[in-house]
Amino acid sequence: MNDLILHHYPESPFAEKIRLLLGHKQLAWRSVIIPAVMPKPDLVPLTGGYRRTPVLQIGADVYCDTALIARVIDRLHPQSPIFPDASALSDLALAQFADQHLFAAAVTYAFQPAGLASVLQGMSEQQVQALIEDRKSFRKGGNAARLPLPEAAALLNAVLPRLQAQLADGRPFLEGSAPRVSDFCVYHPLWFIERAGPLAAILDPYPALRGWLGRMKSIGHGSPEPLDSADALRIAREATPAIVAGRSRREIDGFGVGDQVLIAATDYGVDPVAGTLVDADADTLAIRRSDPAAGDLVVHFPRIGFRLTAAGS
Image 1 (cartoon, rainbow, N blue to C red):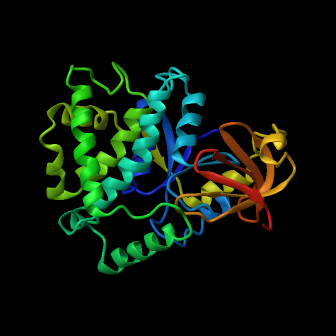
Image 2: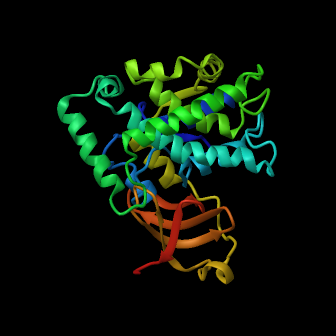
């Protein structure tokens, strides 16, 4: 019941971030391939409505958002840590910038007509249209707007030479001799651009950055084993969530353990998840919920980028 189960699909940049982290840790893990667009009939019973990719399952505990998933993997498997210094605010700031702004720019840039065919290679016209419509609804109600192409190109042309300069002294990774969280967060948007056919030429003027991309790619994905989504639901039903009683921050949030709450992302994919608050601290939130297909679960979220409200509000 302690297996790491990653629910993902191959083309997802954020899933690539976590797949590479699992490779860095040299871990065995179970791979559940989920649809790229809704409906996701075997994922929603686990998450309660959260539909972003990827999701990490450990028994009956479900972890949402890669910022939290990366911390959980690093805590459970502390070898080769990617958070070696909890006070390294600059490292975390770069990671946050990459996950939000660099990723948004990479998607807009790669989805130009010259790159779209390469990025979506193998998909039928009907599947492509379904993906486009799904992503439109994905942004509805959130505060993340689609970045216009001129702004995306401007951001890339500002950031890429700075990454080149940081690596130009011969260091193998962004912060030194070993990859840290910022390496994985910067990598996955550029991995997406690399898949965009001729548009990947934007990376060519930066040889040190290209070398870093090659070193990151060579980390690999560890040892994944396929797992059917029905088996993942069975594993959840037969397991017990790790949290039985948690911390309360009623004096700060106005909510405490035992309250009925909703948790939703604020930027995109804002579908709320309802449950009973079982744990809250400065960095994470967790709610208990139940589903006929998945049993009793605890679903975990990071604080940053998520909103906590009263159920029924």
